[in-house]
Length: 313
Image 1 (cartoon, rainbow, N blue to C red):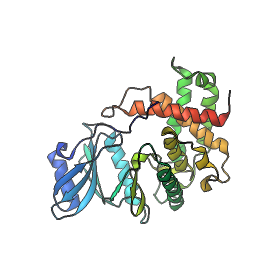
Image 2 (cartoon, rainbow, N blue to C red):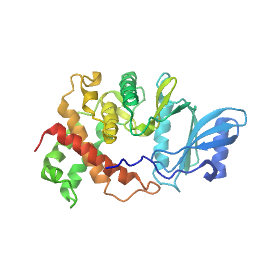
Image 3 (tube, rainbow, N blue to C red):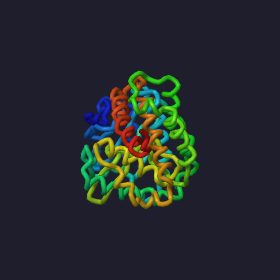
Image 4 (cartoon, rainbow, N blue to C red):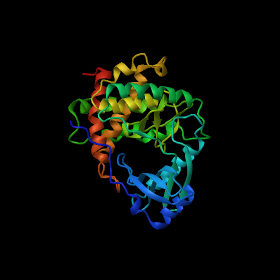
């Protein structure tokens, strides 16, 4: 199956309400005179590299309820995380925010970098796998005060197979249909093993990574929570599998999985297969027309990995 690009229909700097642009200028301390609108990701909001009248540069993201009613709250969640990330974490420095109740904007230092190639190149994938290991170690113990817990945040996704089992779609994969109850039980069991004391990014894909001359940077933190140190490494490899890479060699000998029961990893993978399969069949959210196709494409590659790991006939 051809890969579905992680992209949506983004707002542009020019399309933002004048009051929002003025509020961002205030955060920057100088008016924006040029903006390079960015693509990629699923948010309907703005993502732009901007240049100010004083010569300063920054990265700005903004979204409002007219684009998607839930997206502003995700930006507010990211503000809480970004403001608490300690120095030294490879994430762009947070400079400030704007919030008028409908529109929310975040301003960061600009990173002179690029996203990894899609599909992943082996050398870049190895570089980022190692960087994620370092990231998780640096975020243990969790540095963000009272963040959400993995068990709570992952409950709905990890119960996706229960939803499918309650009303099985006609187009389920035959192997998946045959083992639907077992998959639902396995996926639900993941909720017993995902807690921990690491700040987990929880949305690691190629489009949330930047490669620069100074190293690997991780962006877009609205989903972050406190959880097991190995979760982000497994999530990154879900994306690698989606792009055709065999993820198993990257798990073999992984330092954050030392002592972790392999069946716990399989349970989390089963949970994501159920999540992608259940949510990918829903109508698309406002402003995100491609996300369901992306979820269904990820379902196919994640299910193949789960089938391989379970060994069920």
